[in-house]
Length: 487
Ligand code: PHE
Image (cartoon, rainbow, N blue to C red; front, side):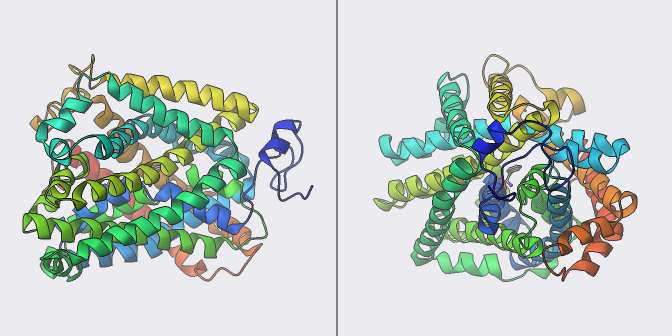
């Protein structure tokens, strides 16, 4: 067996403490079957609900082309540097987040712990939304489009409805099954089918959308920059989106880097992931904005509805008005969202599993069991926020702002991970790499397998620009949540 291509089965059998090619004394672990296994898995993790339900909304809100421009610049500079740092850290240490940080400095182990908390918070609620998406995908087969478009359909489904638990559990069981099959047989094989399907469906739906009368106005609105919309708020919005969309600051890329062979080119792979993720986000805009122009006569509906409101409210109305094509398009669209959410959730759960395995020195099977039970229990608890625990209003209780009245547990979990923990973890990661271990440690790791074209950019971003931008994001988000400023 080559030292490079461990199979998950081999890992199962491997006694603990067998040297890995990263650090001595680290148990053998699974690895991608090649560079593309890694690229696809990271892209599968990145492309998710964020691309499909938030990116088009932000683009519509912030002047179309100008937002796209700012977003792309941020991805190729800021996003690139953080992603390089995380993947190289993982590959260097051969460990998931906690082990990776503590391998380089015991004092900084806490950053690994903070990063590791994030997937345990996100996975339960991401799976709940995955359940909603599954419900909509099924509904376009069995329920008339007009009924799905009715305002009461969504709330009737999510509130006080035992069916939501069923969808949550089914969604999670699919995720567990894929992860249990292992890194190669499960995750890689699923991605090989789902990711190309996702790209083809996105292109297909976008092309169809462009043929609708009036759609071209939507394209103009989407692509032509409205420079008057440029603002600090736009940059902040783009930055937060980029962060979440690339799945940074939660240990995922560290874990995935730890499965990456020392032979393959890291920089090239990271660039491919960026293209994938940003490409699908831009396509999502082509799917949603022109259709809204064609059917609703303008971009206001997209501009004012982020997240669930857009996906489960506005889009079903749009599909309903497309006649016979509506249910087909509705089904295809939700199947696409389902694939995107599923692959993201698989990557979240794989990270949870690897954190448990590395943290407690457990075999993969036991780690899946422990992480699986934990996520299921927390998922059911968060889902009760729409049911028996509907009276709970954590965000309103915390901040007392009218806007948060009737917020649910899910919103609170989302706030904890995205607004608080992720910017903190990213900021500390930059400080750790920039000033504690020094960028050279990462640069040397990258250079084991290739040249590092973006070396200078990387150093400047990690040491100076990224920490400042991150501190601004953090403060601005918290002030925004507390109602002091509005972004
Ligand atoms: N990047 C995913 C998205 O855009 C979300 C995600 C976050 C996935 C964290 C995995 C981990 O929806």
